[in-house]
Length: 184
Image 1: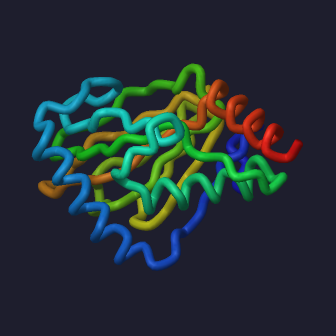
Image 2: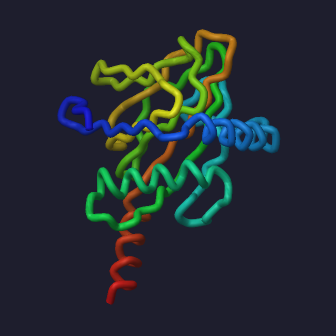
Image 3: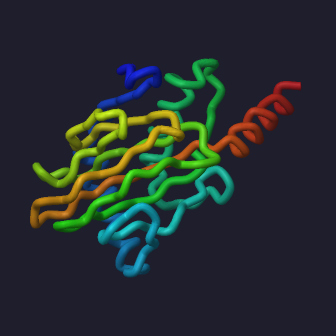
């Protein structure tokens, strides 16, 4: 864990990320083909997929990375080895000139990003505490959701592709309660 001021920034280099990313690229571009407009949230330009509610809906899209994110959270943050499933995730494609304004993820416990495709100068992740991360394919980062963060402009002619996610309080409480019932 890296310390980002008083908050933790957790990071993981995903093993075999090249084959995972190849599969994710295919899934994400297929998702964009089916929903070309996407959503507008913190993004200025670019494409933001519909939110995938993993815990509630068990959506079949992006399952491989969902499992990696969930396992990482359960092992490194929750630390009691209970299996916590990521609440929600979504895909992002930023083209040249696209960026994400500074924002937080209200009603969430932890948030993060996984980098699928990151050409050089395609937009660093920044935190308002004057901390920047140069995106690197195969890296997963997780932080407390109240931290203000954004993404600088993509200055290349190539797409920057990432998957963002949240663990929210309500799903966390439900999952822990369900696991408690299963034990008793």
